[in-house]
Image (cartoon, rainbow, N blue to C red; front, side):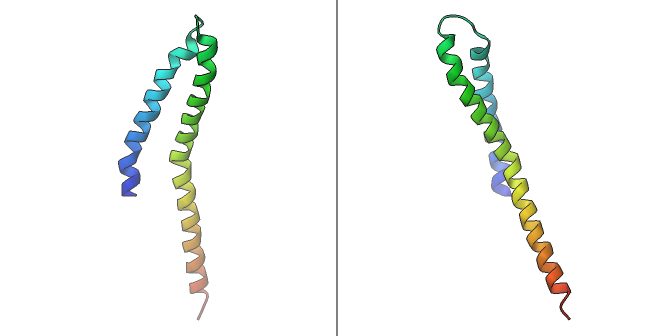
Length: 80
């Protein structure tokens, strides 16, 4: 928990600077944009996956752990 709280701000800052830095590449139609746009699209997609991983993976981990704890409590409570 402590490591997650310390790492969330740097991860979000990296994500924001990358996405905002690549946004002008999406909007340009000048010379060289035909080469740069295909390079920027996977980068922004990777940042979207990072954002999903940053929030979804800990939630799934907590759900699995809570399920294990509840199973252990129910199996221990049913014994006399």
